[in-house]
Image (cartoon, rainbow, N blue to C red; front, side, top):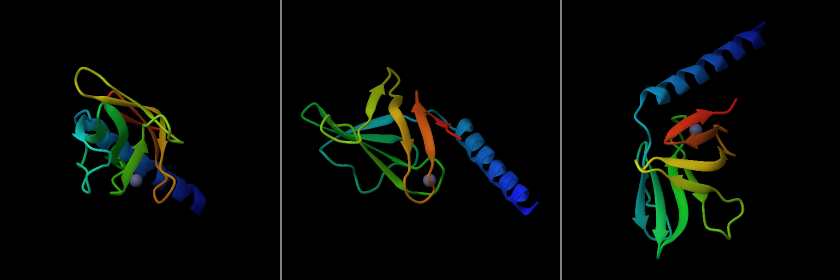
Length: 119
Ligand SMILES: [Zn+2]
């Protein structure tokens, strides 16, 4: 009984945060010079650190709203690593999905600048 109540609360929370992201503009990606991310990331957009035509890492704030910074390595030597592609409108797509290991444990895909939550 109580468990069912908690499950429905969790479901409502997930629904609300997805809705909130769904109403916002597409996320874009800003390219900065250097091999590391700035200390303060933008609220919504992503940052790609690029040095000498080599992409190092992508940073973003966790889309669930918990405020955590997410840093994803894109250099070929890294493990785990992600692929980032950017369309003509500066909207990023990340492969594979992003899984926050600590805290909120968010799991999502970022495709075409939009967050798609994994259940
Ligand atoms: Zn989070």
